Amino acid sequence: MKKFGRNRKLKEGLTLIELTVVILIIGSLMGILYAGFKNFGSGNDSQAKLKVQNDSRILEIKLREYFDKFSKYPTEEQGLRALIERPDDEEVAADYEPLIRDKSVLKDPWGTPYQLKYDENNTYQILTLGADKKEGGEGRNKDFNILDSEDYPTALK
Image (cartoon, rainbow, N blue to C red; front, top):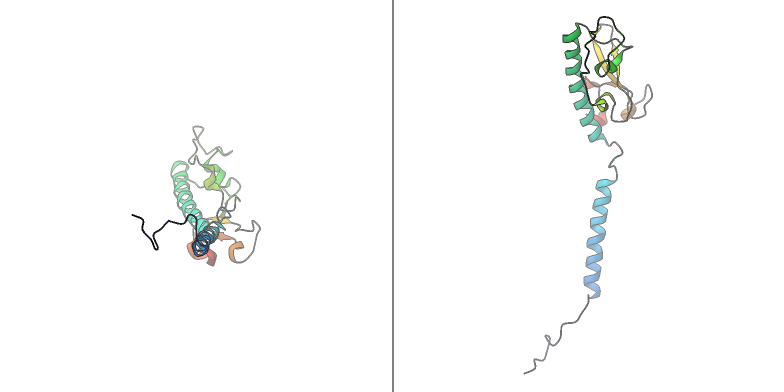
């Protein structure tokens, strides 16, 4: 017995409304993905903040280890490289071994080496030149001491 009415034969394909809904969903997903990956790999602020915070912890610990081992901190001239290679210093033991294996810790999120400096109280600071890689600047381009979170640019707080 044949049935008549609505269920006669299923039509193949999509209606115009169904096709429009599918296109809208795909477009929305592409928009969300684009917005999420727009800054991926360009050193966005949250990634930069994490790297600066992690580097500051590691470098501070390693500078203390250096002091414990040699009874002094590296000079400004030796810089943080003294943590990865033996400095030309007679007071540093001949059996020197690197305190840091991962050299990426010595560079800021923008690829510039951190600078070891001492203030007027002879307290060490680890400075970054900021996103512009030049002295001076404001905002993300500000030079700052990574050991002092109060000194961070607003974008990294």
